[in-house]
Image 1 (cartoon, one colour):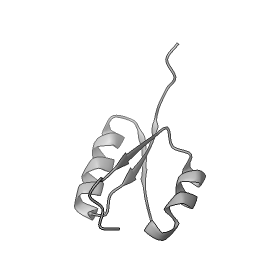
Image 2 (cartoon, rainbow, N blue to C red):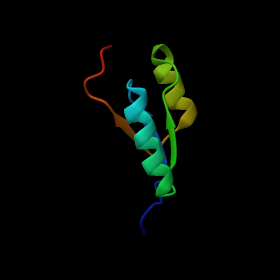
Image 3 (spheres, rainbow, N blue to C red):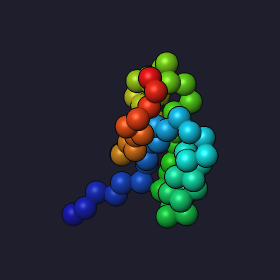
Length: 61
């Protein structure tokens, strides 16, 4: 039996791109959330406990 994966966490510093991704995921009935503070990203991920993380691999950090 396949597990339902519906909680997706977005790590993207470009607000326009992030908003487009979140909007698209919500249209497909996924729960989409994004990083609020890059300094505490590890804490945020632990709190959100997402099923999947979508991350920009060219972050300037």
